[in-house]
Image 1 (tube, rainbow, N blue to C red):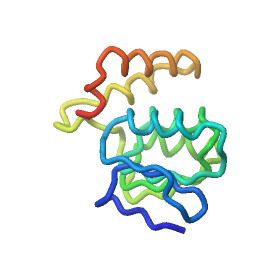
Image 2: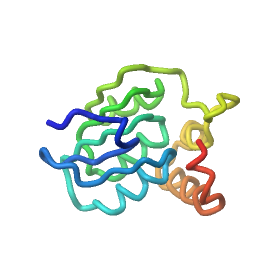
Image 3: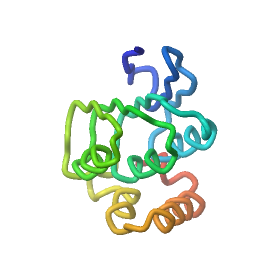
Amino acid sequence: MLIPDFTCYSLALVEGNHLIYSSKDSGLRPLWEALEKYSGKSGLILHDKVMGLAAARLIDRSGIIEKVYTTVVSLPAEQFLKGCGIRLTAFNVVPNILTKDKSSICPGEIIALATTEPDDFYRKIRAMMDAAPNLLSLL
């Protein structure tokens, strides 16, 4: 098993003992791109520095991740992943994921908390990324 190294990346996908994808970018975009690029695979391990409910819901929808390692997880994301049977190792649990300036809950977390229907959630996250391509890297 590869030990997460968040000094080298903010997000990584591991297959077996091989790192198959990594990104230093923040926000949901690197996760979105990784899940799209490796759709069709299964049993992957995700190292993601920050795990909110939006990320957790995208992971579940992808069907390719069996375990997540993270430094920080929101309580809603932790509960969601447990409910889906996706194993989680987290160092800290926080009420919600905040923006970098800590002034508010991040937009992806707000959408995930407010949208229960999976396809509607997916469309809203996609629209948010399309509307503000650089926004998610600022979170």
